[in-house]
Amino acid sequence: MYAFLLVIHVIVSLFLIFIILIQSGKGEGLSDVFGGGSSQTTIFGSRTGNFLTKATTASAIIFMVTCLSLALISKRSGGSVVQQELLKEQTVEKMQEMMGDKQAAEETEETPAQPAEK
Picture 1 (tube, rainbow, N blue to C red):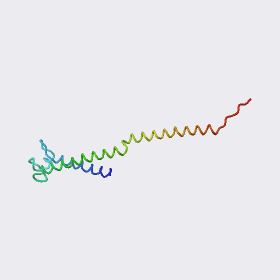
Picture 2: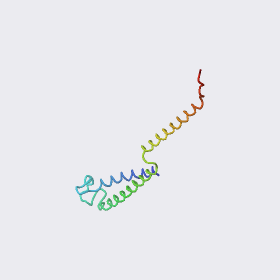
Picture 3: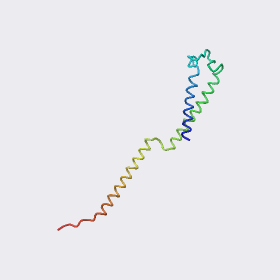
Picture 4: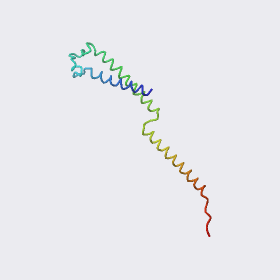
């Protein structure tokens, strides 16, 4: 699920970048380079301003939804990689402490006390 959402997120973000660059702004954007003389005419024909506006709105909504979904899935999966590594290190340290205490206890039980020499 995470990989699927990530792929959708990347595709939508690239599409959103493309759609925004195609639109003409107040100072004429990239559409002017491709021959867009008026504000309503681009290489895709006339009246694309309405289509591009709707496409931008739809892709922005999808982008926001995928952002929130990916954030929620990441949070549920256990946090950041740094936190996971710190937990692993702490677990290993505690296990070593416990094993060290058990080994020390076993060594003292195995070696009987030496009688004092006279």
